[in-house]
Image 1: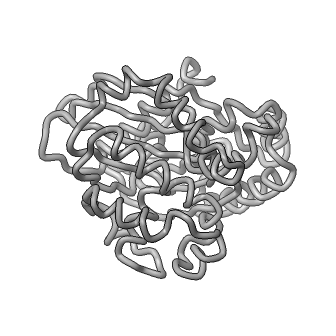
Image 2: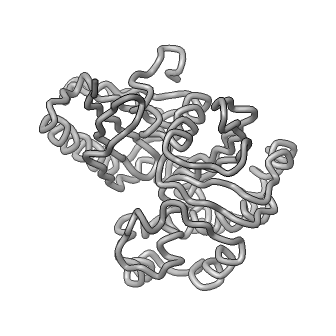
Length: 307
């Protein structure tokens, strides 16, 4: 017996939709969409979502609901989660209350532990691994998760969530305090980062998939070519050397597939470069799966996972 499900992942930079058929625990994609809405932009300065980002986010959610309804999935059946930016923003709950009132969509702001669990479930459910134990890195807009997991029994053996991501790093770069701010995070998480030093890591989310496509020098995004790609640390070094100081306009000129992500990819590239060297990585294997896959496979959010 099969079931159609839909999940929405509301992040600090983008909002992603996945509609899929679940049969015998396996997932077959029907629709996969994303919109850049910048909910986490300037969040460290203002402490709130901007009016513009909320407008863009509301429009994205409204359009996603219409897509889901084509499959017979009503708003109350959509599994919608929000992560770090929504945990931080003072007006997040008011915004999602308005979304629920006007669209009928309940958005669950989930805890860092739940975010780690669902991101892990997503990648484990759709990726083949050579090793029994692997490390996963999820670079978001406002946070980055590092996760050690047993691929045989899906047990998470260690995990951390750090308040640093592509959008935050872009803001730090624009305000000329990137080095100091990133150094503080690395100092605060020094002992934890030491435990995550590894030669190979599996990476999810928009920053790393974009960097993979930039490595291929593609102007359009081809997911099948990026999923499973192995980037050597030397490849990251080369990307950093070539593209670390570009303006959003130049990123967009060179890589039109970035779209609105051109405004935050510089911070994502800087963060990826520094994390790769801090963790002494040799290779980074890219997966296009993640949190929205995990929540969709799970089918529900538990009360104790809500932030």
